[in-house]
Structure formats: structure tokens, C-alpha cells
Image (cartoon, rainbow, N blue to C red):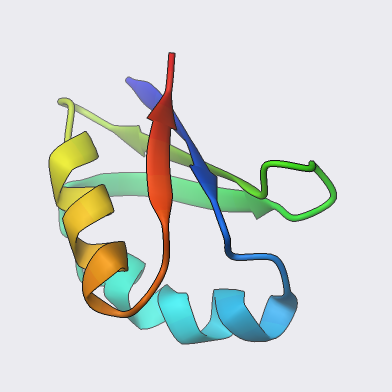
Length: 69
């Protein structure tokens, strides 16, 4: 399953800051950011929907995250 999120993670420095949080979510198989996109897209691959976990964990470290349909 691939989930796509709009974030405010707009720089490589912010990606480095968020990386440990994302890496600690064991359900994630693969992830990447597209900071060239105006919505600063985060793509997550996982077996099941873990959108609420992603949104919650990124919010805890100060980032906005909204799942796109």
C-alpha cells in the first residue's frame, strides 16, 4: 500500500530531522520525500494503512502532515 502526504518538510535539513522518527515506525517498508513538489510530498509504502501513526508521529516533532486522496 502506498500512502501520500502533504507536509511542511521543505528542506533536506528538515528531512534529516524527521528521518529517525520515520525510521522508527516499523510498519514502513519504504519512504521518500519530494521537496520539489509544492506540497512537499511524503510517500510511504507499508503493508497496511498507517496514516494516523505517520500524522501523529510527525506532529509530535513539529511538522504538519495531511494524507492526500
